Length: 312
Image: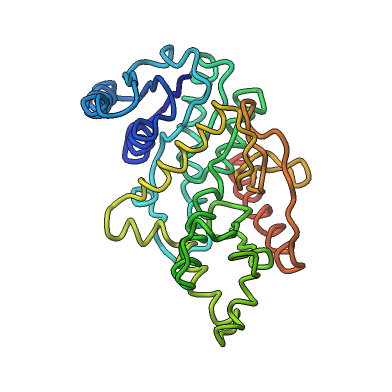
């Protein structure tokens, strides 16, 4: 199977590297505005491929995306260049929407025309409203936002650190927007089948004291990384490669990922069954009243951001 990656900046290159190391596909095609950059990234990764599974990784123009099962879109202005690294800014990544929507209006028709049967995975920030725009332009529903998949992994990692447990054994999800309005499902978080609130009680802790620091660590993880390394790229690269694998193998795995939600009229993340056509079905998890209110607010934030650029 074949993966296309459009955009070979920090994130696109990390997606390509992760997919190559994981053996996510037999063929990877890189497309970039500057062909020389895509050629260089493909060559650099290719020189290491004899040490892994057989892989062809090449650069090409949009027509080279033909036959791809999934196309990962990473093109656009990143948080640092777009001034979206202020923890006190309630817009967060949504600040990048106007500029990146312009870029998507240019590239999505070319992607959709070349890879007519592909699932389109939107990774560029902010991915949820950009996935909405992609769906409209492409004219089909095989569109995913990377959404809160990475946020949920971050949540599991920080919970694991707090309780000194392997994060692979932590069950915890973030839903809603991949951004400042994301929703942490504390009510269903479990470790070894034990609810996280109960574990806090066992340790003599109050959940209300634990929540703020853990949520901030996840919500602003990208900013903390950018402050030390210019770009948040490797985690999303690995997460994107895994999403590609789920799509290409038609796994029907359940992950928190962004898709169009008819009930609210925008893209946002909920636990969803993912397969060859993208999201097969969405499952709304059990939530507390507070979490439901937060999810509605998160949807409203995305809706308002889309309304602003559609009116401009």
